[in-house]
Image (cartoon, rainbow, N blue to C red; front, side, top):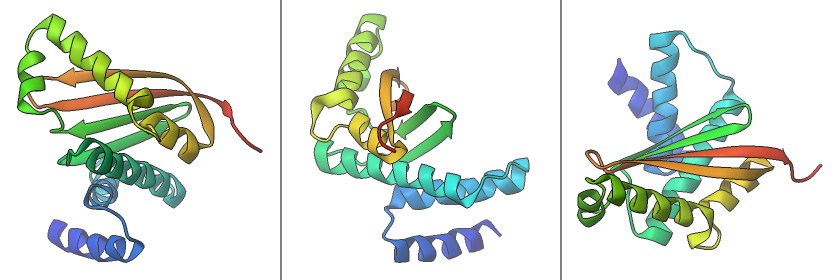
Length: 158
């Protein structure tokens, strides 16, 4: 059953030009709907999938990193992005200490805020049509994952 859903989803996603992480993101929504009975509108799924695709493309093109997956959750004025396996070995090793974890976390926040143009913050602000008020990141040195939370403000355009 799961294989069938993946195949059907990946063909449709490939026609839309979505990246691999975005296809996985869309597929996971289908599993959550079936397993947990949580339903989301197509617009919500499309928005979260589009953000996942933007972040995955940014990481690949600007940072030279291919995350194993990008998961996005949008609830009200908060966007949470989970990037799996994005830390290189040296940063993973550095993040084993509390001080190193703080350093890597500040570096990741700096990159999300404006380390490249356009930054992830700008991409999310554009996708959500809202101003980003704050960005916070958390690092997992064991898995090499990053979780970023974007707090949104008022609409940027009418």
